Length: 259
Image 1 (cartoon, rainbow, N blue to C red):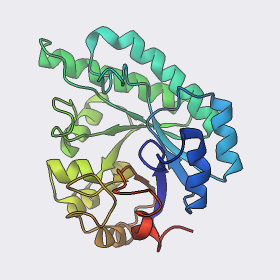
Image 2: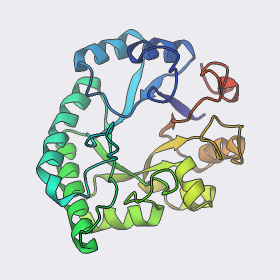
Image 3: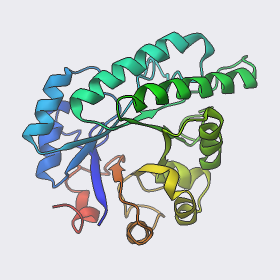
Image 4: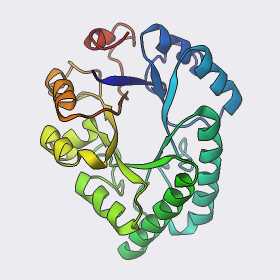
């Protein structure tokens, strides 16, 4: 049976962020994820997790000026010190929240910088992060994102992700496989997931087109969920989609899976 985590950045926007933990638990979710915890007191977030019986499944490393349009800084040669400081901050939060997976957003490829320098910067940064996280029992994940939604995003394919992981030489870096993004970039969802299963530590979902809940688009999610069980995927699946109406009204697809 798949394990679903509510992405509190995307779901339950009918209430304020701190109220979304209770809303997720009431809807039957046992796990949560979200983009960033850093605007909130880590102890307050930990209390909300405990109070609502929720597992913190995932959050991202600091990713620069998100409101200003930045989507990660790991590829920026002039921001290495900031990236490294962010790793320490992320670990501090993760340890308090009991979160054993952190995702790194590569960022948008900088203009006017040699391609080899960009790659070298990213590989060096993920190696640094992976080593620091491993010492704390935390996995580092890398997510490929489609370049329709975020033009110029540096990591945009599954094999590219695996090649970058291999270049780092680290055994503590894994794939965060986002079904929505990879449907847009590659297709071949089931075969890719099966072939790369040992490297996949986390899966996220949304339907396409529209990035709404399962059942609103072209992806055969009932098949995919059964397939994931069949091949032995036992990680979490993050529900990172935009509800078409309200979150609760759009959870019909999940009735068979949520408690």
